[in-house]
Amino acid sequence: MCRHLAYAGPAEPLGDLIMAPPHGLYRQSWAPRHQRYGTVNADGFGVGWYADGDPVPARYRRAGPIWADQSFADLARVVRTGALLAAVRDATLAGADAEAAAAPFAAGAWLFSHNGAVAGWPGSLAPVAATLPPGELLSLEARNDSALVWALVLARLRAGDDEGRALTETVLEVAAAAPASRLNLLLTNGSTVTATTWGDTLWYLSRPGGGTVVASEPYDDDPHWREVPDRTLLTASRTDVRLTPLKDPGGAAAPALGPTDAFVSAKEPRT
Image (cartoon, rainbow, N blue to C red; front, top):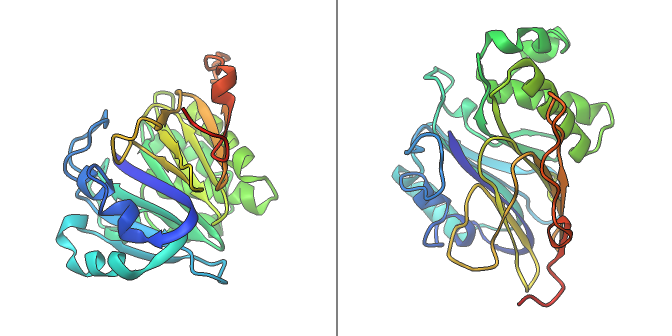
């Protein structure tokens, strides 16, 4: 469906996180190693990043494959950031929204991506969509499931929920309305990264020099990458990662996390 990545840590070029790694997001656009649904992510891509002193992120999005955009390759070589969210897209359904359908979606300081698909779209979420104000529905950036899921998350954020609660409540609401949906959500505000696993893969890397990477799959073979269990909420800062099991709407809880999985600090020595 897509591959996505978020980073918070010391500033470095976009390309060091997206283009340069041997199995980075750039290569995942045509040769992912852990993708369970779909094989080629060529239906658009996007990157959002934060500049020093500006809480509102910039975005670069295109409707075509990332490997065909030489302008982005040049930009990624020189633009540095301490936080980003990037995604390459494999569209669930063909549409006319072009780059507007490509993550990351944005509002204020937030960047958002959805890896997965809503089962039975669009009919399955009609009752859920009706809970949003008409103005928000009419102003959706794209007519796809990810844009509506983002609208549901954003409504909760604007109502005062923190990032973890906003993602959790949205996943549970959508999963109850549309069972068998895949809802790996990724959100950053430039300082923290929040994500869910619900039907697809997610990994994280706490780097010893500072910085946390959260991604659909590892971008290299560093043995310190850790896979996040399904049905889990991940909350990460530049130094710490916390994992919390999510409860299925049907009443079943995710498998309990081990004590070493529940909390990881990048400041601690790693073996």
